[in-house]
Amino acid sequence: MDTGPESVDADVCIVGAGAIGCYLASCLARRGLSIVVLEAGPMKSVEEQQIGFDAIHIDRHYHGATSGRYFGVGGSTSKWGGALVPHTELDIGTSDDRETDWKRVVSVVNDHSTAVLRALGYAGKVNFNKYASQELRQVGEALWNAGFVPQAGLYLPVSRKNLRWLLDRDFEGQSSPRVFFNAVAKTWRFTTSAQDRSRIVQLDGVAKGRQQVSVRAKHFVVAAGAIECARILLEANSASNGTLLPRRAAIGRSLGDHLSIAIAAVATTDAPQAGIAFAPRFSGAWMRSFRFVERQRPPGAPRAFSHLVFHNTGPGFAMTKELVGALQARRIPRVPAADAIRGAAEALRFGFSRFFKSRLYIPKGTPVHLQLDMEQPVCSSRRLELSNRLDEFGRQKLEIRWAISASDESHLQAAAERIIAKWRCAGSVVPRLEARALKIDGTKIYDAYHPVGTCRMGDDEEAVLTPDMQVRGVDNLWVAGTSVLSSAGSANPTFTALCLAHRLAERLFRGISRDQSIILSATVGT
Image (tube, rainbow, N blue to C red; front, side):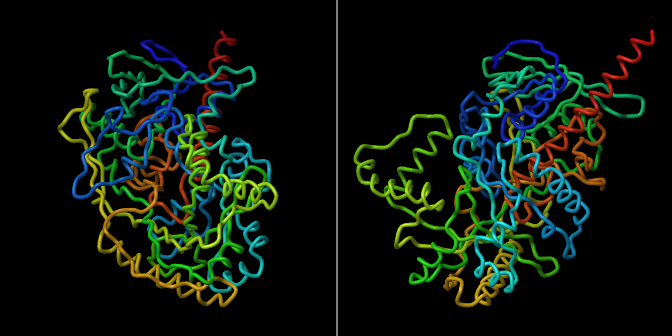
């Protein structure tokens, strides 16, 4: 890994070494391509304000731009839970004007799920739905009859949650990707053809100390997260006086997320039943947890999923969480001796249940609630724009306009009532729920942030990308990540973004290989 300054050439330059950047760089390097990655953060992940990327929040603070994103190799995967859940056919339809887009997305997920899981080290069967029905048995059947599809998400092993490992491993005779730390993408240099098609010829990255790296590549991929991807395209388009991208391309518009809220508590007397039925399982080092998606949504209802949350606040759980978090973030754990003593017995129970029962240990008396995660419907008023204020890199600061609308609140209320009613139809085999009044104060609970929609792909004039994730009007510029999705859907979007990145890797490899073959043939012919 490098720090610059330098001038380099590559087959592909990737901006961003988060989940998608690491995965894409690994896929392409293993195919023998030369890869350069520019990462705005240091080797270990830090928050946005630590590198000078503090955005300006208009109307309401969007925590997905602060607590929800990290910079450095591995990006937010140094903190995330590692959930891998696919979008499915349940994300298609019900009077949705993005139905065609979702059909494409689901098709890509179906085609590339196995390859992505294999690349991440999972050797088992890809059985998100079948596993849930087999494990839940009578409970799963009752939920199905009540109107739900039970699913079982996969969680990466602790040692693999931080996807930085994809760049640290042996590339088996191929050249490893070159990663430049503290290299903020600043200046895009491009040419324009007679047909008004643009082509990127060079990208200059700059650090706080003004060290610079210049990259010339056949293709450039922006994989810097939903917020930063939009910012980069806004900057590049602004620098070209609005000529780089088509005039109607809606860069930064329709920023969306999942709205997460507890909608019901499991009755105290039924909490043990909830633990027995729904405690996460382990398949080797991989954890499986359950979620529930409605088999049919009312026309116009946003996509959503629900799942049970176990509120374990015991000292053993806290100690285990700190140890696991430290391993994931590659730092020294911080466990005071007194806390270690208090939590030792419970930690042993966690270990026993994990290795001998293949289940996550749920202590007696653990409160349980049903959580709803609903996507925000597409809305152009939630958007990202460039301000006139400059940051320490000389770049325009980003303005973020995000809020929970009255329509969002209405959809949340309707979804909560509908899901609780269906759950109760499952009968006595599922734990009883006690509905609670929804407290919607404009913020999001927990630490899961899934920003989407800012660089949407599609066929219409407002789409920023083609369905292949190529920036419209630019021959060799692509965007990869959750920003390409029109909305958050009924699943954590990272796995779907990885599947889309896998397809992009295959297409870039084929395109570069074809071009090289043409050049070789022409050379031989002369």
